[in-house]
Amino acid sequence: FARDPRFNILLLPQNVGKRKAQIAAIRRSAGDMVLNVDSDTILASDVIRKLVPKMQDAAVGAAMGQLTARNRNDSWLTRLIDMEYWLACNEERAAQARFGAVMCCCGPCVMYRRSALASLLDQYESQYFRGKPSDFGEDRHLTILMLKAGFRTEYVPSAIAATVVPNKLGPYLRQQLRWARSTFRDTLLGLRLLPTLNRFLTLDVVGQNLGPLLLALSVLTGLAQLALTGTAPWLAALMIVAMTMIRCSVVALRARQLRFLGFSLHTFINIFL
Image 1 (tube, helix red, strand yellow):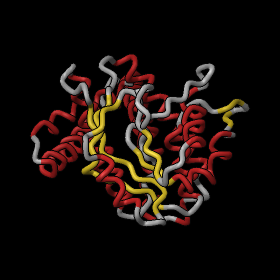
Image 2 (tube, helix red, strand yellow):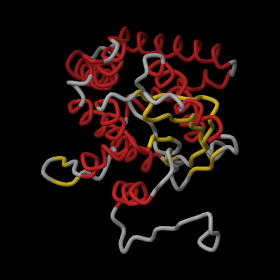
Image 3 (cartoon, rainbow, N blue to C red):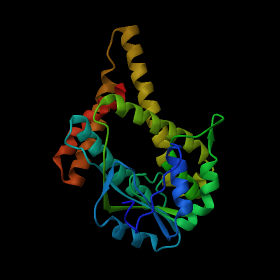
């Protein structure tokens, strides 16, 4: 690609992380749109054709595509993650897009308006967390900045991107912890933004943050009950099973794919990890 005149390869003197690499490329760019693609991602051949029409509205600052697991068939875990991505895109992002505010445009496939990015780069570059330059949560933070600046963020389900996902529990857990830190941190930073958005989005964001905490509290309470009284918390366990099966059944019907019934196994990962 370096020998192809259509490409301009930027080699930074040292590894400075994703954020500064992004900024260096954006500042050297000249087009109206900037397409961000993660290095482990393969795009469908029509992704740009699918994203550009959404960006023709000047009020839209960013639009993301639908993510799938490129290595879906590697293991039981990658199959579950592929279903998790489908839910994250076609439930969460699709619902948020109805109100013009996808709360996190995912890095593997997202198109930005360069003029919007140019006005946000200084804020994006200078983010600190606990006194140190932030080195995680780039996608969510840039999306929050875009929304704060008054731009809409959108989701295009027909723009498909296949990305490599963790195939072992250790790397998956580290990834989920990193994403959870970003969710909690940037939700706090975006609290002032929520009143300017639709009430559904406030409910959605609050649910994303309280849901995992309440599940953890339920598990700890159940273990305490078992230890102190010798009785199992059957009612709470049945409630979790019922909610899981109802959700997975609804998704299986919506997607017309029976495999989503197997997503109920993901509940064990949520509870124990």
